[in-house]
Image (cartoon, rainbow, N blue to C red; front, side, top):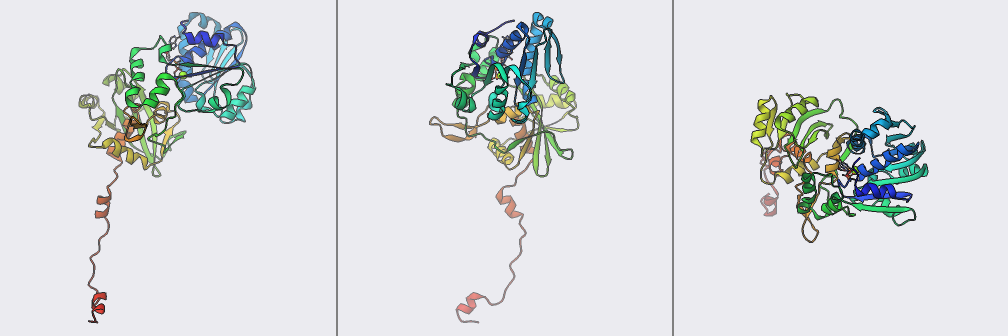
Amino acid sequence: MNTTALFKHNYNSTAHVVVNQGGTSSGKTYAIEQVLFTLAVKEKLIITIVGQDIPNLKSGAMRDAAAIHTSSKALQRVIKSFNKTDRIYEFVNGSVIEFKSYANAQDAKSGKRDYLFVNEANGIEWDVYTELALRTRKRIFIDYNPNSGFWVHEKLLGRPGVEIFITDHRHNPFLEDTVRYKIESLKNEDEELWKVYARGLTGRITGLVFSNWHICEVIPADAKLLAAGLDFGFTNDETGCILVYKQSGELWVDEVLYETGLTNADISKKLSAAGVKKSIQIIADSAEPKSIEELKRLGWQVTGAKKGADSVNHSIDILKRYKINVTRSSVNLRKELGKYKWKTDKSGNTINQPIDACNHLIDPLRYVALNKLKVYSVKQNNSKLPYTQPQPTGRGVFEEFVGLS
Ligand SMILES: Nc1ncnc2c1ncn2[C@@H]1O[C@H](COP(=O)(O)OP(=O)(O)OP(=O)(O)O)[C@@H](O)[C@H]1O
Ligand SMILES: [Mg+2]
C-alpha cells in the first residue's frame, strides 16, 4: 500500500478527534481510509464512515475505499466481502467498515462504533455529529474543505484531545499534474476559492451566483424535458452533460455526465449508456462546431447555444427567475453550484462577472436557458400590451376651463 505523510500523521495521532482540514485532492479521504483499513485488519472493530448522503459517499469516500481495496492484494485476502446494498466491508477477523448517512440526530442515535470518520463534515449537522461522537469509543477522524467556518472551528478546534492537520494538493505525490494545474489556476479566477481549495485555509466564500436551487430526490413523472445541455472538455476540464426539465414553472435538473478524457465517440456511448435518447435536443457549446458536427453524424440532435454579447450574464438572469431543483444524485453539479461565484476585484469587491471555473455543468444549464427559456425584454413586452385607440370624448376639461362649455 502506497502511503503519504498524511497517512503517518493520522495513523500515529493519539488525539480523540483528528481533524483533517484541507484543499481539494490533498489525499485526506484516501489517507484516513487507509488508516481505517489498517486498524480493521489489526483487531476486530466497528468503523463508521459518515457522509452527507449516499450519492456524496459514492462519488468520494466509497470510490477511494474501492481503489484502496483493489490496489492491495494483502487487503483483499483479509476482506471477506463488500456488501453493495448495505455498503459494508466485512473482514475475515469480524471487523466491519460501514458507509452511512443520517437523516437527523434521532437517526444518528442508532448503533455504536470504535472509530468514526466524518467525511466532508461541513455537510453534516452538529447535532448529528454529537450523537455519533457520543457513541464512538476510540477515535474520530474528520475531513473537509474549509469553504467557511463551521462547527469544527466553533466547537472543536482548540479543545483538549483535538488535533488538526492542514494539507493541500502539494502533500499528495500521487496526483496528476493536470489536476494540480487546475487547482492552482483557481488563483486567476478567485483568490478566496484558491485559498480554500488550493491551500486548505478557512475561507469566507460569499457572492455565490445561484442561491435559488434545492436538492430534490427525483424528477416529477409529469415534468417536460426541455433539452440536454452539453459542455465539451478533455484534458483539464470535464465534459459535462445535464438534462433540464420544466414542471409547475420550476426547473428540474439531472446530471448525466461529468468526466475528463472523453472523445466525441466516448460522449456518444456514455449518453446512450445513461439512457439519453437520440431524439432529445442537445444544446452544446457553440465554440466547438467540429464536436457538434461529429455528434450529429453519430445521430444526435445537437444545436449550438445562442451566444451573444453578454450571454453569460443574460443566461444567469434567466436562470435566476426559476426555482431550480437539482437531483440528489447530481453530486458534481451540486458541488459546482456551491463554488460558482461572482469575481472580485483587487479590493475584494464583487464585480458583475462570474468566475470562469467550476462551470462544466453550469454552462450546459446556461446553454439550455439561452435556447429554451426565452425572457422577453421590457420593450418587447410593452409592444405586446393590448393597445386601445383613445376615443373622442367631446368636450373636455380644457373647454370647461376656458369657458367654452
Ligand atoms: N496513498 C495514495 N495512493 C494512491 N493514490 C492516492 C493516494 N492518496 C491519494 N491518492 C489519489 O489522490 C486522489 C485525491 O485524494 P483524496 O480523494 O483523498 O483527496 P481529498 O483531500 O479527500 O480531496 P477532497 O477535499 O476534494 O475530497 C485520490 O482519488 C487518489 O487517486
Ligand atoms: Mg475527500
